[in-house]
Amino acid sequence: MRKPFFRSVLSPAAFGLCASCLLPVTASGEPLRNEGKLLLTNGISTVEGASGGGLAPWATIAGNETKDGIGVSAHVTDDELKDYEYRSAGAALGLFNRLELSYARQNFNTQKIGAALGLGRDYTFRQDVVGAKLRLLGDVVYDNPLVPAIAVGVQYKHNLNGSIVRALGAKSASGVDVYASATKLILADSLLVNTTLRMTKANQIGLLGFGGDKSDAYHLEFEGSLAYQLSRRLVVGGEYRSKPDNLGVAHENAWFDGFVAYAVNRNLTATVAYTDLGSIATIDRQRGALFSLQAAF
Amino acid sequence: MFVLIATSALMMAQPPVSTDAAPDTPPPGAPYAVPGEEKVDPYTLSPQNAGARPFAGTGMAHAFHGQEGIHRIVERFTQLSYDDKVIGEIFFKHDKVRFKRTLFEQFCFLLNAGCSYSGRDMASSHKDLGVQQADMNRLVELLQRAMSEEHVRFAAQNRFLSKLAPMRPDVVVR
Image (tube, rainbow over all chains, first blue to last red; front, side, top):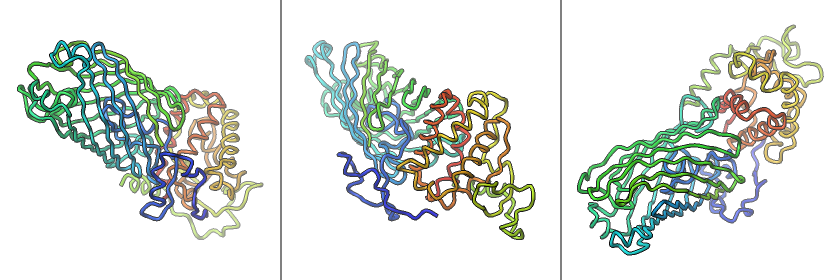
C-alpha cells in the first residue's frame, strides 16, 4: 500500500502564475497536484473567455489541473477580417476540473468602415464578458465512451458602447447568455465532438448589444465543433455557431471556422483558424485569419 | 454515479473469490504467479479480468507489430513507469516481473494478438495503489511514448486507448 505523501515533485514556486500557491491543500486535505491534465484536454479559449474550441464553449475546464488541483489559463486572440479586426484577451480559473470562472475583454475595430458608418475611423466596439461554467458529469476522455462530459454555463456580457448599440436598434447594452455543452473525445476514431445549446439575445455575440427591433426575446442557438486528433500535439477541426438576427439595419449570419491547434508544450497552445463571420454591421463576407495563443498552468 | 455503475457492473461480473483455498497452494492450472514472481493471493481467473473485450479481427495486432511489438512496448512502458519521477513511486514496490507478464497478456489479449489474460481484475489490482487522476494521465503519456517509439500509428494508439479509458473508475481511486 502506498502511503499518501506530499507530491511536491513539481514545485509550485516554479510557476509564476500558480494559483495553487494560494491554497496549499484541497478541502479533503489532499495536497494539490500540478500539471495533471492530458495535452489539449483543456481546450482552446473561446472568444468569450470560456475554454472550448475557439467559437463554442466545451464541457472542459480551463487550466491544466485535474480534480486535485486549481489551474489557470490566459489567452490573446486576433482575427483579421476583410474589413474589421477582432481582438480579445482573457483569463480563466479552473477549480478542481469542476468549475471554471472566466473573463474576456473583446475589441472589435471597425477600421475604415467606422468612417463610412459615421462612427469614425477605427471606432471600436468593446465588451466585457464574465463567465462561469460547471461540469455536471462525465469526462471528455475517460469513462463510458457513450457518456460525454456535460457542463452548463452562464455569461454576463456588458457592452461598453451602449449609446451607439442602442442607436443601431439594440434594446440593451448588456445581457446574459446561458448554455449547456456536451463534449467527448471518441478515442476509437480520434474524433472530438462538441454540441452546445445557448439561450441568448446577443447581436454579434453582444458586440452590437442585445435584442433589437426584429426581436427582443431569448433565442435558442446551436454551436457545434468537430476536431480530429492527428497526434498528441496536433488537432484540426471546424466549428459552426448560429446566432439570433435581431437588428433590422444589420443582418447577421452564423459563424464558421476551420482551425489547426498545436500544443507547443504543456503550457502553450497555438491556434490558427480560417473564420467566416458572415455579415457584420451591414458589411458582408467578413472572412479572415484568426491567431490565438493560450497559456495554461 | 457512472463510476458506481461501472464499478459495480465489473464487480458483479466477478464471482466472489473463494476463501477455502489455502493461499500458498493454488489449485493446479491456476497460474496466479509463475516461477520468478512473488506469491499472490488466489483470485478467480476470467477473461473479463482484462477489463474490456478484445478487438475483432487482426488489424490492431498488426498495427502493434504482433506479440513482438507488444513485448517491446510493454518492456519500454514498464521501464518508463518504474523510472518516472511522478508515478515511479506507485510502481517501485511492485513485482516488476509479474507486472510485465500480466500487462503483456492484457495488451495482447485486448489487441487480439493471440493471448489469454491470467491476471487479476482492474478494480482489485488497483485498489490499494492510491492512484490519482494526474497519475493515470501520466501513465497514458508514458504508454503513448512507448507506442510511438514502436512506431504505432497515432490513430491506432488512440483506438487502443479507447479500450483502456473506460477502466478509469477502477484505477483512479482517490
